[in-house]
Amino acid sequence: MQFRDLPKQYEVLKEKIDAAMIEVASSARFISGPQVKELEQALAEYVGVKHCITCANGTDAITIAMRVWGVGKGDAIFVPDFTFFSSGECPAEEDGTPIYVDVDENTYNLDPVKLEEAVKKVIAEGKYNAKAVVAVDLFGLPADYLAIKEVCDKYGLLLLEDGAQGFGGSIGGKLACSFGDISTTSFFPAKPLGCYGDGGAIFTDNDEWAILIRSLCVHGKDTGNLNDPNAKYNNIRLGFNSRLDTLQAAILLPKFKAFVDYELADINKVAGWYTDGLKDTGLVLPIIKDGFYSSWAQYTIQLPEGVDRTAVQAKLKEADIPSMVYYPKPMHQQGAFAGTDSAIADCHVTERLCATVLSLPLDPYKTKEEIDFVVAVMKKALV
Image 1 (cartoon, rainbow, N blue to C red):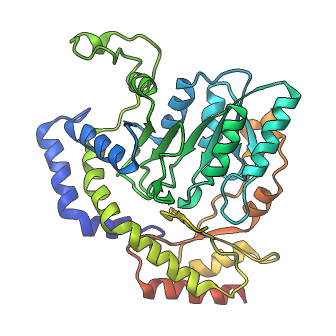
Image 2: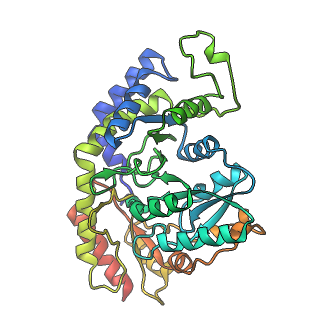
Image 3: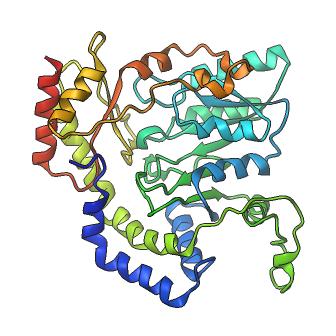
C-alpha cells in the first residue's frame, strides 16, 4: 500500500500530464513559459486574492515573505512549536528570532490564547520587537484565523499563513492561502496539490509587495519597468534564484483541475471512512470544527497513553501498511536553535503530541476496502 498513492494519481491523469510535459519539451520554453502565468492566474482566482507568484519551493516562499517585510535582527516571529522545520527556519535565516508557541491539542494548529500570552511576554520583556506571526495550516486544516487575526490586529503584527499543507482547505467558504497578509504554499509531491519535484507559491492582495516578491524571485531584477528590454539585467536589489519551472507548472495545471473537480471531495470521503471506522477505539481522532474544511494532507491520530508507537508501526508494516510520524521533535528542541532564545518555550501540548501522533495512509484514490483493512489492522495493533 502507498502512503500517498501518487502512482495511482498519475495513472488516472497520465494522458493529460504526458501531453502537458510533451508540450513543454516541444516548445523548449523551460523557464518562465506561458504555463507558469496560466497557473498563477488560475491559483489566484481560485484562492480569491489579487496576486499569486510562483517560486522554487515552499521554503523559499516563506523566506521571501520575511525579506519583503524586512525581518531582521531583533525581530520576534511567533511560530507554532508543532510544525515542519521551515516554518521557523525561514525567519531565522533572515536573522529574526522564532518564538515558539504551543498548539491546540485537537486541531494541531497554533493556539490563539497561547499566542497572545507569548506576544504579551515578548512586549513586556522588551528584548525583541514583536513583528509577525507565522500560522501553519497543519495536516490540511486552516488555523483559527478569526482568533489569530484578532491578536495580530491588537498588537500590530503581520500575519503569514503557511499553507504548505492546507491548500484547498477553508473557513466559512474562504479558502486557505487567503488569510495572511502574505500566504504561502508548497507543491512538494506529497502535498494536497503537488508537482513532480519542488515548487511553491506566494499569495497577497498587496500590489507593492507583489512587485517586490516578483523581483526577489529572480535575482532582484527590476520588475517595475518590464517594457525595458534591459530590465532583466538591471538588478536593483539582492534576491534569489527561485522560479517554478515551466514543466512543473504544466504538470500542475491538469492536477489542479482534478484537485478542484473531485480530489478534495474524495479525500474528505476517505478521511470520513477512517473516522467512522476508528471511533470508540481510544484513539484521539482529528477534529474539524464547524465551518472549517480540511484538504487532509495527513490523517493523524493520537495513540492512547502507554501505547508503544514503534510497536504499532511495526504491526502495520507487517501488513504492508506504511505510517509516518509528523513530527517526532518540537521546534524549540531542534539542534539548530540550541542555546538561543528560540529554545526557551513552554509547549507541553506539542511535547505530548510529538510522542503520540501517528499518520495513516491517505489520498483521494484510496478505496473503502483499503481503509477498512487499515482500520482492522490498527484495531488489532492496539490490543
